[in-house]
Length: 282
Image (cartoon, rainbow, N blue to C red; front, top):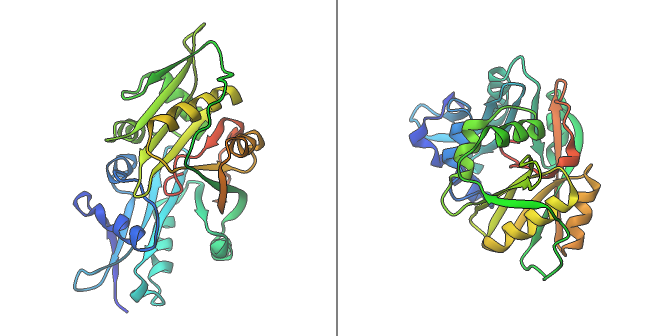
């Protein structure tokens, strides 16, 4: 089958999310704008001679690493080498950088053949009610986060391992988003922040970064109380206190994805990651 691969244009941004919806993915309602802010040239599309779009992949370049996601081929065109070509094009675009992705377990071997190595699993949790409980965090101020400041940008970089201010500003400015930052009352330093965005079904947390368990719990409960249930949170399994917090809150444990890296992965302190940003962009 003849096809070509090119960069997806901003006005075509709906295409990956249409494919994702057809596969039953619960994408964020307004993801397109912040995704393109992360890397305006980081989304590739395969199309045939009639300009029919066949599949897509995200290959987003951060300053220290790249990330692959939104890797989808329309069902009727699978088996024609489109996925293999898209992955090769994504890796070419990210050449010279370590590259991460989140794979479903059934695809782990496929990515291993392309040079990716398992790092850990990420567990999806879902819940739809909040039980009244004591707030055990103290000396913490929660503030609405709609415009970034240097402290939040620096905190995010330390947790995420790469600079992404344009993405993050668009992320917290989405319609219907709930975003809060936690600061120390004593020093005004950032202790964590959380974002929860509207999705096709309920709302999705991401990220939930916190320096301490009590801060994470306060952010989790407060943000959830202001967003539409059911809520979803994706927790890296090495963060055992985060998993325990999810169980304590009565969340239902769901599917697991595999975080994989090609090249040397960034040295991340996962003890501060109580919820990743997204499976699509890391």
